[in-house]
Image: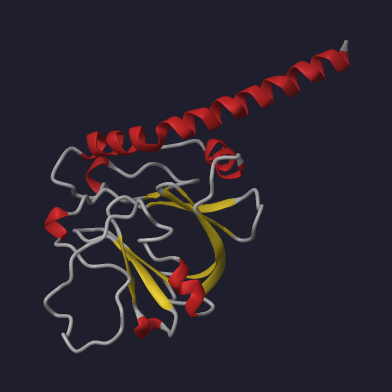
Length: 204
């Protein structure tokens, strides 16, 4: 699924409700370093950019079918967004303190993120609370993907496996939040048309 970068930018900046926003450190895959990024959660989309109100989007993560779990082996206030399934990624983050880490819990702010059930490998004597119960991966919808902003769409065979046609599955996801994106696009087109009409009047 490809969405024009300008539409995503407009959707991020429009008046639709923001579920959660704040700074987090996002771990890079290549050199395992953390970079400070500004994150904005709107519905089922997690936007990230270098700073607040920055017009340049660095990426958008579709949160369908993920779970949030602490990963303190990566740091005291670290947690991960986990998408279970062949070829799916895990995104690692680091909060500045415990309250910031707790504020990204799926049962409060990430309400649209599907939890998963606890795995048998978790020791019963563990005293650290989990972000959410873990559910078996067989029950999860596995169609999460980072929306590319500048690169080409992935090949058909590179979409995550979901047990169904990936294009059909993403079509369902698009329907889920497509109305808001459509509204944002209409607002953007109206504002652009108004500017063009104003320019024509000025030229007259």
